[in-house]
Length: 195
Ligand code: GLV
Ligand code: MN
Image (cartoon, rainbow, N blue to C red):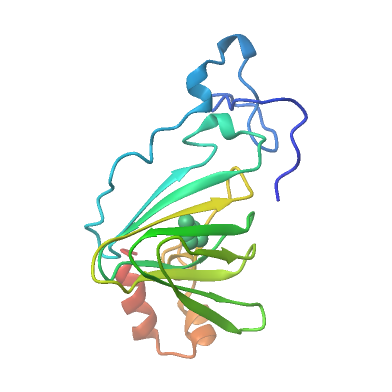
């Protein structure tokens, strides 16, 4: 989904304050082998949190060599019962592979049609750009998957915190009307997200 590159590479200069669509390139005299490699997926992540989830991102911010190349990946780890809660990526389609365990992968179209499948090791799933989706570990043990994106920075809009944990807060009248619930329900959800 990102624009095509106009040169071999353009390793991001994350410190530059220049404003462009992406990041300016660091001078090629400063580019080294390490700009083309990333070892952030080698370690097991900590999944002791309320969602039983750890997402490690290899995007332009953590792996500046990806700048202008239109690709990125995540390592996604789940505790038993862990959930990657409903979210969407505004700038990319997602292609995922399960390496270990069993995930329930679901997505919802713009017509509110729900598609889902139990996905096991070696099996792939695709999430069309912008559609809301989730993964839940429905296996006995831990689960591990990798996801790839056709953007250097796909972005992630998480449905619940977008509406209930925004700063400043989204007005309660909007949320009670949108979800057709009482204000105490809205306040309860907001409190779960620490707002
Ligand atoms: C999974 O949905 C991911 O965004 O990595
Ligand atoms: Mn996703």
